[in-house]
Length: 268
Image 1 (cartoon, rainbow, N blue to C red):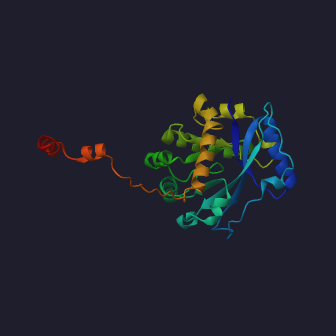
Image 2: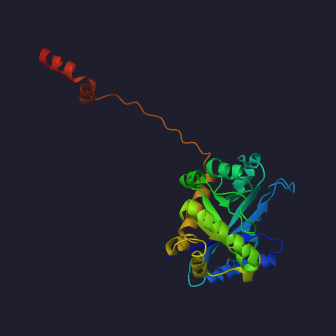
Image 3: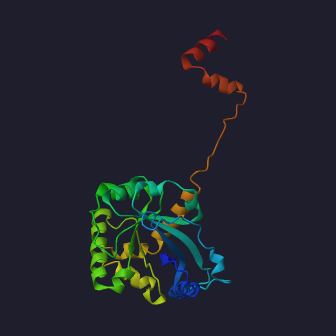
C-alpha cells in the first residue's frame, strides 16, 4: 500500500492554524508532511534560524486516516536563490530534514542542478518561469538524486496563477520526462489541501502519466527523504586499514611467478 506525503505545508506563527492544516493532511490520508520555512537572504536580510521542534505542536500526533502507522512531521528549509553564495554548506542546514532551492535565474538553476547540496529544486507557480529548462541541467539533477517540486495550491487560488502553474509544469515535464518530480501543496489553510488520489489525477494536467502522478506524492517523496538523510550525514568519514597477516606456505607459492615456480620445483 502506498504511503502518501506532502512536503510543503507553509509555516505560520499561528500555532492553531498550523495544527489544523496538519490534522487535515492526516485525515486526508497523508502519512508524512514537511513544514516549510522560506528564507530570502537577499531581500529580507533574514538569518537561517533553527526550526521549531515538532513535538511542540502536538502532545500526541494525529492518526493517519485508514492506517495505524504513526504520523510524521519533518522540517524543511527553502532558500530563495538570489546569489550562489547563499548555498554554501552551512551548519544551519543540518537542522532541517529537507533543503530546497528556489532559483530565480537560469544560471542559478544550472548551479542548483549541478552543484548545490540540496534535496529539492522549486519550480515557479505564481509567475511565468523566467527561463527555459535545459535538458542537460535537468539530467544533471536527476543523476545527483535531486528532485523538482511543482506546487498545486496557486492553481486553486487564482486563474492567472493556474495558467502559470500548468505552463511551467508542462515545460519541466518536456525536459525531465516525468522523472524526479514531486507534487506538493504549499497549503496555508486546511481548505487548500486535496486528497492524494485527487493530486495523482491533477498530475495529468501537469504532463505526468498516471503512474508518475502517483509516484510524485509517494515513492518520489520517500526518495527525497532518504536523500535528505544522506545529505545530513555526508560529511562522515569511514577509515579502514588493511591488516597484515603472515603468509602461509601455499600463499607464498602462489605469489611466485609461474616461470620461476617451475624452476624451483625442478631444482627440488
